[in-house]
Length: 233
Image (cartoon, rainbow, N blue to C red; front, side, top):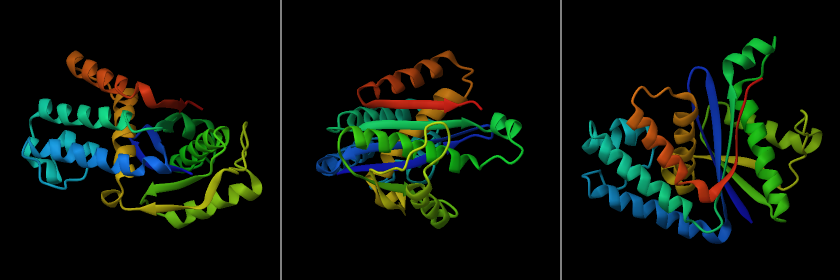
């Protein structure tokens, strides 16, 4: 059995969803990895139990106020998190994005970007699970209209996902479920990964050192790279 944890990150013109996939036997290792990063962050004055939420880490919000205005500390903690996630046995990362401006320009009645990226991401996860002769349980971060998303995903197993590579998502256990990220280590992992890719792909860095830091952080994930794509309609 595999578990796929899904979260989103977006700007006005780009939308991404990422999945952190682990085998069931690595769930304890994943929980320990998140716990270890939290303990490391406490050494910087971060509140115990602070959720590993990328935006809050980098902006010094919520439980991360102790490192507000200290990007060096934020990057050190973020790098530690990426390193331990990349070492979780059997872990793999998948990201699907879409250029929202191009999507809206191409179609008279475009699908919402969340629906588009979730469908493509589920296809990626299903192909990976099928390749390894596994079923996969999907847990996504809470969003608006999540019940409708769950029903639509289940319907793909009846009518297929459509598109140029239609899939029945045969290896995905339905329904997909939604949970609070502060309660699920895998969702925190997914948040860290998809936020970083959004920063790499959609954000224009005006500081060359900041760009280099983002690229170095992304490279830490090389051991778990699966498919990473942005669709430009």
